[in-house]
Amino acid sequence: MLEKTMRVNALYDFYQLLLTAKQQQYMDLYYLNDFSLGEIAEEFHVSRQAVYDNLKRTESMLESFEEKLGLYKKYQERLKLLTELKSIVRAHFGESHDIMNIIYKLENLD
Image 1 (cartoon, rainbow, N blue to C red):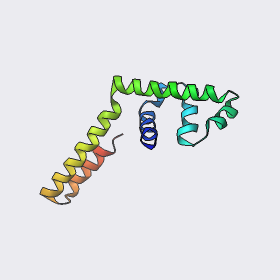
Image 2: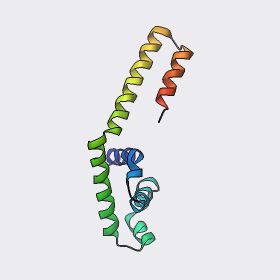
Image 3: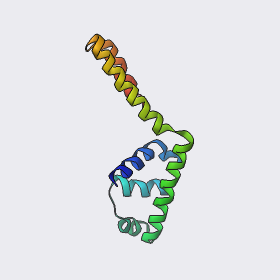
Image 4: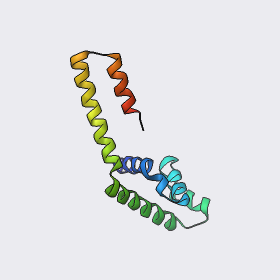
């Protein structure tokens, strides 16, 4: 369950602007603020089932965006390559500030 939650949060970070305002509100409350389905339902004056359906549909949309665009996968691959690069740089140059500074900037572009 934790792995799924982490994945949904990551996908949400990448694709939240492609969602409607209502979908963003539900996702923020449920995944970022740890509201229960009942609390969200009460907040929006809808049923728990409506909240659940909206969240599931939104999760499905996020997965669909990822299938088509692959931003999260590319991000993970980029982080892996940067980790490998840091390891190689340290092995050959130690803690060269110029090179490590450039790697740090690459890691924090997003």
